[in-house]
Amino acid sequence: MIPRTRNRWALAASGMLVLGVGAARYGRDAVAPRTFDTPVETADAGLVPWCAPGLEPIAGGGCFAPAAPSTKRPAPLLVYLHGRFESAAPEAELDRQRRVAERAAAKGFAVLALRGREGQCLQPELAHWVCWPASERSVDAGAGYVASWAPVIAEAETRAGKGKRFVLGFSSGGFFAVILATRALVAADGFAIAGAGPIVPTRARDEASKPPVLLLSADDDPSQPDMLQLGDELTRERWPHDVYSRAGGHELLDPDIDAALAFFTRSATEKLPLRPPLSQHVPRPHDPDVRDATPEPPVSPAPPRADLPMPASRPAEEEDGG
Image 1 (spheres, rainbow, N blue to C red):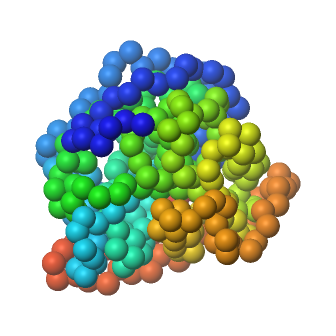
Image 2 (tube, rainbow, N blue to C red; image 1 turned 90 degrees about the horizontal axis):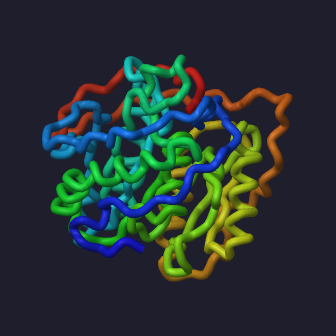
């Protein structure tokens, strides 16, 4: 695994490109291969004002929320990778970002929400959506993204301290989290992957590069077959992992966030799979004839904060739940 130094998020060698099945509806690339000869530009040291209420724009382009004041330093750092969203309509994603930060901070985690790039979605109709590398076709772009995170990671760790580090990825961000874990592009103490699937080959660089992984899945999510497949592949590779499953569709709900936080805390001292389990629900395969039946939850208004007076965005549904 990449050494824990200031540059531990720097570039690491990635695997080879292989073909895969697209799953465009929930955030995976699904068109002909695209080359990435031009490296992803390094994030500048300026501020990117796209943060949800409760998070602060910090140098390097991320959004940061500190852990609860009672948390002993260094606080564990949770890196959140969002689902894809239309750049002109980020409200639903900002609500997810806010909820992740609020629930994590209350549990003693600092949060760093990172932003993908407009134009990374390979489908032409999503040219103005913000995505992450999310398929075998775009694996090679991952190292450039990781290299660009160095300034913002350094700033976040200056604020939180250099403690444990975890990654939570949803949908497009979940696929990218799979790339980060299986290609050992970043050093992390655990990964939680929601609504995504495998990026073949599912194989660790070496036995020491198998951080604990939690799979967050939902029965009526179109990604459910891929999540079940990812679980099978992790089992085949003897990769320590656990599963949290629920009824419903393609969304990152508060109980999902809580399950990820509990997993990160418990997996540090307990063997996997966890006993008692995070969920008693037994995952079932998604019925392709059933449309994602879970509507997005209503976006609750964010409570005002005196230290971060930022206006709340008006809620809006994402078109594809990605």
